Length: 159
Image (tube, helix red, strand yellow):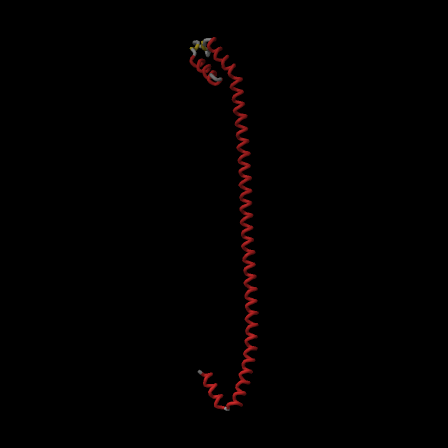
C-alpha cells in the first residue's frame, strides 16, 4: 500500500471505531492503527521521492515541448519568410521581364518605322528616276516613231 492508501485506511478505522458513551472519544486497536501509520511513515519518503521525480519529469517534458514548439515556430517563420521572399523575387522578375518586353517592343516599332521611312524614301527616289527614265524613253520614241507609236504605248498602258 502506498501512503495515500495507508492514510485512508487509518481514517476509515477511526470513522468505524466504536464510540465511548457521553464522549467524543472512540476505542481503537492501538496495534493495528500504529501498524498502518508506521507503514505510511515508511512509504512516505519513497512516495514523496516518486512524486518529486514525476514533477521533475513533468517539468522536463513541458520544457522540451516548449523548446520543440519554439523550434517549429521558428522554422515555420523562416519558411514563410523564404516563401515571401521568393514571391517578391518572382514578382520583381515578372515586372522586370515585362519592362524589358515593353522596351524591346517599343524599340522594334521605332526600327520598323525607320525602315519603312527609309524604304519609302528609296521607293520615292526610284519612282522619280523611273518617271524621268520613262519621259526620256517616251521622248526618244516620239522622235523615232512619231505620234502613232506613242498612241500605241498609251493604249497598252491603259490595258
